[in-house]
Length: 518
Image (tube, rainbow, N blue to C red):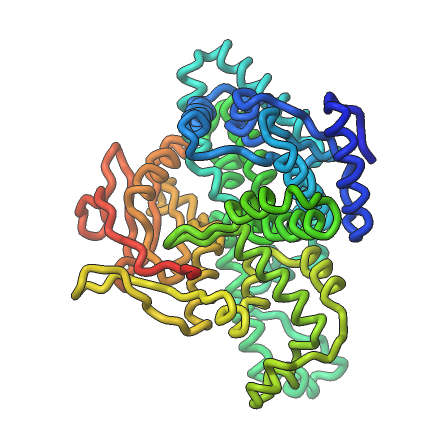
């Protein structure tokens, strides 16, 4: 469904045409609204994350300045900006050529379909335009009441921990929702008096409650009692929620933190589906234009624009390129039956290259993948040896002897592992709340879930400083450095390793290698 907008007649007709093609291919999307803006207005919207009304903050102004300079100097240009709402809003730059508008519209319908159907977006607020405007109004009210600098500094603290959430928590049942209750947590049982099965006759007790069974019950009681004494009971990734519920915040501060947290959860699905989302939109803009919408005179221009989107910079992963090629690989594999045990175990390389069972299930499969996967599961399941070799992916590292970067490995398993490491949690470290009463002094203790990469201690210092301000007491983080467990503390302006007291203000870790496509 197309709603009324301020599109010119030719763009309105183009939208009707592109939407018709998208429906023919089976895309299912929200009602689509396109707005046409000049470059200055579009940069302002982009600086606000795609939302025209955001609370005033220096970060928005900084983003706007960077975008404006990039456009003025000719080093960057916004082609498409689309937001996950119902109806779905997208913006077109007024000065773009007609072929650009055609490409952007087709690309946007791919995003729209992904927003509506991918499970990661199923819990998001589809009315976030209104909510963002409401947040902006409330924060401006606090700035008028409590002083602009005071509120902005507090917003800075909140934004510094906006990544410390659990993007999967909306899909996990809470303790209140879970029908299964810890049967030992609030009971009179103890390790000396574990729960036993009731027996109709005393002589059956030794058979129904043997020593092995009672030992397991004792262990369960111990674990339940241990959990009940913890604060929190179990480590949790939603640090923002823990701070919100337990820190000594003023009413307005708690409200600001809750707004920043709500917006962080709104953007979280985009962070965990960047490769899929951009790949899916690129797949459909390419298909719609090359098979349906292009005029012969537009082919060269389209090829130039498309190549610009797909270009891979040295040392970087291009989500557009990786995503579109992986969707194409999946479609081809399921069309030809190149999957399953028989294909994987085939040792005839000639036969394997010519393998084609003509199943023609590729389109059905990519729609299924689009619905149920996120970037990590997408890469984990479909980044195969065939795909890696076909796309020429490899990793490289600095050779200390020559002081030059060289290819480290072409082994697809290692390349895949490198890609997965770089995208897990958006490339950020996984941090959990471990203890809210560390040292029995009310200090906050976080835990870095070490996965082969050490914390950047410069970032850790500033994050702990802001957490300490929010918590009202010192903040600590447990991590692993050079294979040794360490706890770093931020207290009274100092950042140091707890055991030795040694200051730790310098960055100690550099990425060893990166993935690259040749």
